[in-house]
Length: 480
Image (tube, rainbow, N blue to C red):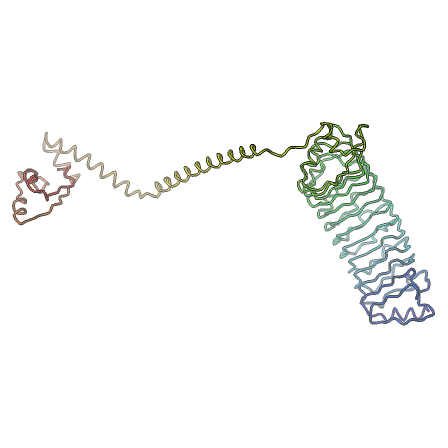
């Protein structure tokens, strides 16, 4: 029997071995032949009991290609340090539902590539320091349903890739701050059904920055920390049901802005502050059943918030007092005794008033915007207007003013007129149309009295001839 068992282990060349039976034994007298090139599955009827199956006497050193090993639901009591020597490719090891009571610190050191390790439903009372050292690729660790009373200092410091950790259904009384050091990638933590009395839920945030789900139900927690904690933005699920919590401060909920699911059922909550859940804008599920609610005016704030809550709150909140309301639904009892009235929907008139006010505000905003646009266009045009044109206009207007002054002074003295005329030239334009040759002969006969005059055409001749010929047009004669 023993020789045949050794031949089976020596001849295995597949990547997986499943030994699911009530006991892990050698083959019985039936001598059934199992294929060596495929997955080996042997039922309980083909085994006889063997006590130290995972001792150094029986090892898997020849199974160098072994990747998955399932030895759950057996009667394994002892695992020697060298039981897994030589199977460095092993990625998944299932040892759940056995009778293992102790593990040496070097048991899993030959498994650097292990991803999933299941030790649940055994008889472990403590974890040896350094038991999980070197398991840098471990992603899932299950220690559920053992008898673990305490955790050593930094037991998972080398498990940097760990994402799932199950410590539920043990006998833990406390969660030291150093228990989860190094678990920066942990997303789900189970600590339900233990004996934890007090826990700093939010203090775990800096050590578990990527944790999304925390399960602490069925413990003995009576209060949460009142110290203002840092924000824990990654947490989405928090289960505190089945504890002895008597009060919940809004400051704690304010530190969980992205919480989506909160379970507080079966605690000892009687009242909650009106703004206890006001900061939980992402909340979609809330469970408050099984608490001894005091149905009085102190609960009106919570009732108003529940009426406006768009998620699911489970219902089933029953009054524990006063006596005349005991057993009644909380919301119905508050409404029936005029302690709280549910908000009525807004009337159509109110909606119309809001719409008209919105229209007025929108019109004023549009008017102000239009004025600003016009002013902006004017400002840009003024800034882009050529400076040379402005200077030319100023010079032209100044010349005209000087011309008028020179004419008046020339009538009195005659000397200043000549100097000003030389400095500021007089401009005029004559446009005319001739009808015959005689007109040109008669018109252009200059009779100037002085050769110093700058005006080439005598104004007297033009003035005398102007009424007789309608085709003569003068332009800008103001300077003559």
